[in-house]
Image (cartoon, rainbow, N blue to C red):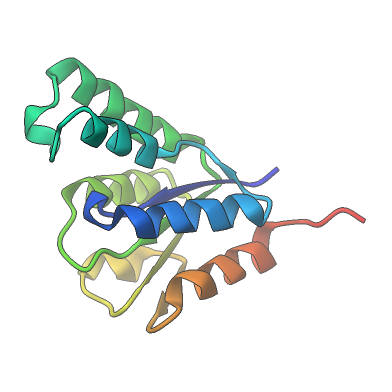
Length: 141
């Protein structure tokens, strides 16, 4: 079973949720769905990390990094705006020599040169997922 961690900016939560749902539907196993933590925090009245307790921040950060480390594939939905957390996760994936994929509207950062596969432009996220599935998912008859 092929595992994947999907990183994105929490400001683009719906995009991340769509990608996680599509990856799961395609037969990939998501190692950690961080969007659940973000949705829970927002439901609890937190607009961003600044008002989340230090213990909860630590728990979430550790779960995210563990999800990256357990994944066969790391897929970054390149954010429209800077995302510190997604950048940290990309660094962990590169250091761990994961298969790394980035998709988005346009190239933005030097780190994108270090990944295995990039897709840019309209529909890039689903094109990236198609590449991941074609490359890594074995369909059993």
